[in-house]
Image 1 (cartoon, rainbow, N blue to C red):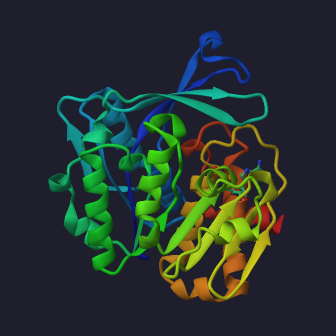
Image 2 (cartoon, rainbow, N blue to C red):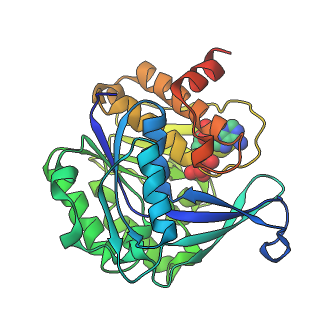
Image 3 (cartoon, rainbow, N blue to C red):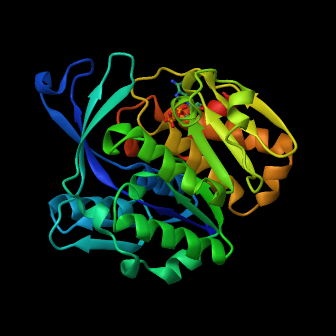
Length: 320
Ligand code: ADP
C-alpha cells in the first residue's frame, strides 16, 4: 500500500445465500450471511490486492450494520466515511443461486439505512483526498441518498479525482426502466472510466447486438475508458485512440457474485497511481488481464468478499 486512495461510495448490505444452489428461496435448506454491496466489494477488492481504499455510505445501527463495519475494518478499508442511521435497518438481499452459477436478488429496502444518507453527513475531507472516486447507481434511486451521491461526485471531481462508474443496474429496485435510464444517463458524462456488463449495455442502448457499434453509442467526449464485461467471454475496451478485447481465464466457476466488482477493484488499483496506463494500449491490456484474472478467481468460490483474491493468487493464475 502507500498508493493513492480509492474512495468507493454507495451501499453495503448482507446477502442471504442459500446453502444449496439451484433451489428457490422457499426451498432453501438454510442461508449463509454474505456481506456484499457492489461499492463495498470494490473497496475490499482494492485492499485485498494491497491498495488503499475507503468506503462512504450509511449502515443501520443494528447487528448487521456493525457486522458490516467490522468486516470493512478487518479488511483494512478506511471507515471514516461510514455513518449509522438510528432508525432504519441495514439493507438485506436474498439471493437465488441458479445451477449455472448466475444469481438473482430480492431486496429488503423499506427504506434501508443506505438510502437515508444525506449530503450533510458526507465526510468531505475524506472524499477530497480520493485519487479515484468510484460509485454505482443504487444510491441514485431515491432521496436523500441521491443528493448525497451527486454531491460526493462533485466534491471528488472538483478535488481532481478520477471518477469511476459501474452502473451495477438492479432493475427491480427502480420504479421503472425509464427512470433508471434517465438517472443513469444524467450522470453519464461525469465519469472518466465506465464499466458496463453486456446486460447493462443492452438495457441502456436498447440494442441486443453486443458489438462495437452498440458500445460506442455510450461513448462521451470526456470519457477515458469504456469497458464492456462479458463474463466468461472476457471484456472489450474502448478509449479515444484504441479499442480491443481481452479474453477471460478458464476457471471452475461456482458463483459469479462479485466478479465485476473484483474486476473493477483490480483495474482501479493499477490505475490509481499511474493514469498514463489509460493511454498506452499494451499496458492497459496487461492491467485488464490482471483484472480479468481477479474476476475469474472470484467466481471460483461462493460469495463475493471471501472470494476476492490477493495479488499473489492473481499472479499465480496469470503465470500458471
Ligand atoms: P459483472 O459481474 O459486472 O456482470 P462479469 O461477470 O462480466 O461482470 O465479470 C467481470 C470479468 O470477470 C469478466 O470480464 C471476466 O474477465 C471475469 N469473469 C466473470 N465471470 C467469469 C467466468 N465465469 N469465468 C472466467 N472469468 C470470468
